[in-house]
Image (tube, rainbow, N blue to C red):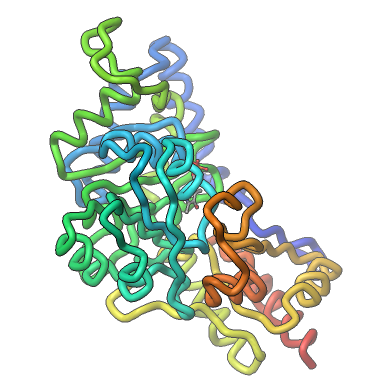
Length: 371
Ligand SMILES: *Cc1c(COP(=O)(O)O)cnc(C)c1O
């Protein structure tokens, strides 16, 4: 078992794999024996199961969460001249995809407690050119969707939920991805539902958009070699789909395990001068990350690293200040909450297999740093 000074990684997937090892190897054999690698029954079943899990009718398997964002926007017809409102404080892909389509990402600030987009932050960013709002459900909890959806529908603007970090999280009784026109998921290995490589999915209740996404992920061909649209290769492969199907029935238990660890951290860090995650009323977080706001964050991170405890900064540079987005004219001071978050946030190990002793060690080292 864990000894006193053994390193604590930010994420260790071996504990999740071990009990599923035999089942995993059996489904991988099944796919190999079938020699059906692209599409087929595993992908179809995976799409149905994950769509149902997310409270949606349609699932369209994608090669990654990034490609899900890209393909979703292509299905919505986003292109040059269009503006898409995104939070500045998110993973790069959310805005990168907007740029790749020739549209303009318009960066909005966030709520200081949840780090998520709010309707209040979005409203002043809307123009006649705004075609889409992408709320990101960061770290495991949903953005305030009622307010954002009301604002969007009053202006005839579409909403696509980036739920790469929040599969299965609940907002006022509704699942992440079931509220906007489209929802996108990532199965990057570090997400709560992780594949053995890159994978993602679009989920939706809109039959037309589902059809468009299916078409576009396969170069817009229907039938084969007859192209009505210009799409790409955004396909999910059968091996990843089969692996995801083994994991899906365990997802809720894993997410609950993370939430239990979060609860323990909250207690253990009560007296430390750090801000623990704030979960908004009506939200259930799946805690893809447990992110504290910490004074002297970089020194704390170094202290923890010296003690063998791995942490990460999601994200050190808000997107409106990224070099590659300089063309959009973002300046320091434009989005103060995002900029402040980038200086303070620190993600602690939260995976469900962590022991109480490990959680206590992390918390004790944080308290010791500030004493
Ligand atoms: C991980 C992530 C993505 C991209 O997913 P990939 O599968 O890595 O392409 C997009 N948005 C957010 C918020 C993410 O965390």
